[in-house]
Image (cartoon, rainbow, N blue to C red; front, side, top):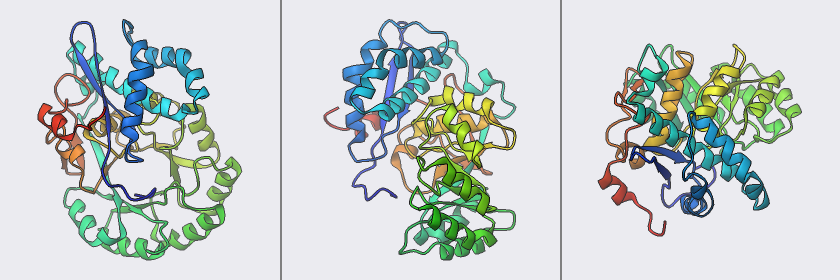
Length: 351
């Protein structure tokens, strides 16, 4: 990973049940560090869960609003404000799943979508895997390929040049440097790869870099800037569009859940794209695909190219790429529930 080596692949799921016995599943961001899932699970159990008991709602947004009102000072006091956002996001997704399941409708039917499927792109392609993974995913109908760059030992322009040769006519590459560059490094590197026409450059600066730096970078490159997995709140997303960010990537497990992503999509200018970010288990992946489907044909959802049993085995064979698209669940709810045997197999001891 960009943040370091991982001995295991962690994830945190949340299941919420109502008084009638209906349930919903969500996912709380817990990719890093290795025991982030345990930490956040304990916070949900010790702090948040009691505030959900006997809560009545018509819209999942009401729950986010109520929890922020009751608990925001607590999380500010203990220095866990963004962890609180991750938890709220997972809860919102679970409540969407619960509400749709209770109503007996799928997400696609509830939203009136013309296509019960989402467009996808291949992401997190490492330098050593270009020659294998780009052709492999092209055969699945994917035409966008996002590369990991920013690691000095691999080189940046060399990776992009190799990938560009592998991409078929009409295919596009993107790059993700995971907040690893200074402004000067970003300017220099993006200028070196402009001839390969990347569709966007993701997190070329730190998410909390001064807005003036983002604006300066946008003025020095023709490559559209992208980001969002480390941006919290519609106001902050909109501020980034004002300084030149043209591809917003909300993460359904980190901020806002389904509600936040849908609200953001309504708020953005016409020339700004919504391409959901996601890197985790099947629950969050299905929710992210639903967001892309709801936004429409201008939106693509990323799917990690690397092996991940939490995506492929946890809920069964539900994230299947065909002609570049993934079908949304047709049954009532937002997601397909995890298989009991898989939950038992993957369960973390001590939660």
